[in-house]
Image 1 (cartoon, rainbow, N blue to C red):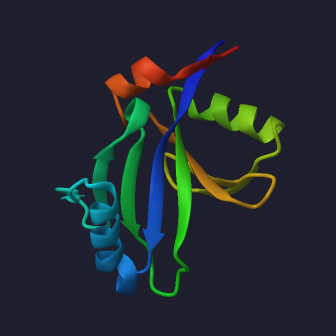
Image 2 (spheres, rainbow, N blue to C red):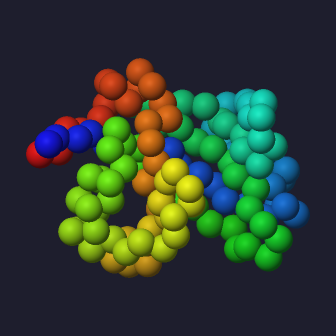
Length: 128
């Protein structure tokens, strides 16, 4: 059965001591204001860019190195996991509702459910 997915979010993962500075920098660099998450202060958004691609800033735990990672959103997490594993991805952790993986080069990414609503509907790729 077909499912859909798309590269949806670029996350800037920053430890607590760099988080505020990183938010300010990327807000100024992109011209997009920081929009704090109303429920969870770990997350903030810099909004939507080309084709509904989102830029987010995430506060990670102390001692975590700054890094980037992407989220692939899908309407069928198990099907997308199987597709990506067949391409060489490796499961790292079940995060409770979404998965953390590494690509063949060792780069971190996540497979998540649909987060962007209409943007997902407009830009997702359908896979056989």
